[in-house]
Length: 237
Length: 174
Image (cartoon, rainbow over all chains, first blue to last red; front, side, top):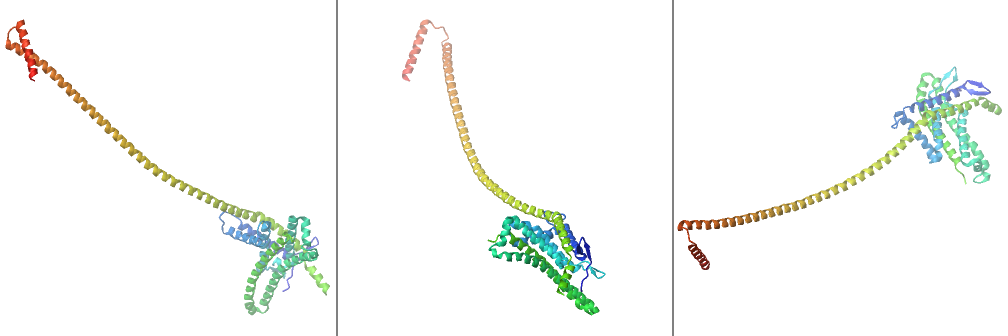
């Protein structure tokens, strides 16, 4: 079941071709999805517009559940794109598994920590940025020593654990799903027709469950992003 | 052994992917914002505003309609009382006019009657006067015929005296 990947090296950086292709494909799908649903916008929404508006209302609802009121406004758009992107990225690996000469070319990009980490980093950097914007650099730094100064190390460690939990939770869930699908495929291939009959329904069930997990993880990632934003935007006195 | 696995993990980790993801994700943010998010949220806001405006407009037009209905009701009441007043005035005017006509007719009739009475009186006196002259003439004529001769002055005088005497006696007897 060991997946083999092709690597490209460019100005000293290693690129996993499978990851890059999947990221590109995911981004393309998200763009095409939102682009074609947002054509022919009217006051009375058509089918496509309704779907998109429902999705926007849903992601806005995620932000509003954590930050009701004005302070959540700047995050509506980011959470919308983040949620849609992670959802598509989680699900894409369940349907597209392209292998050529033993090398994997598409998979879930979120099944790699090197992809989930920058996503978590964008969220956390944004939370720091908005905190500095709101309180100024002094107020932002003061939040690390509040409510009492000896909590400074805990607060600092918390920043790193936030980053790690946010990224590794997503990676672990999706990666485990992919591993299990890979195992089921191996089972199906092991003993001819008999094992196919046994493995096919299990694969179907697990794929369905993986869609569910993918949606849940996208939701969790979005809602935790909002939690980190809101925590950075309130002063602990 | 431990060292080897850590190095292998670093070896497999491809930092380029992270960079690639960042670039693609930021590009995706820009594109989606420009092509989908902007127009759709604008439309949603427009719709919310329009609904608000429609609701406000409905409230004001409803208030206006109620005001107009009340006004119409008041006008209707007014017009009813006005109509009653008009009818009353007409009735009073009619009565007055009738009385006037009656009075005029009465006075006309009275004057006509008085005139007729005066005319009749005058005609009677005229007829009486002419009858008296005629009688005098006729009596003189008859007397001439009966006497048939020229009266002397003395005779005449006697006759006149006798006549006057007769008249006075006639007056006395009457």
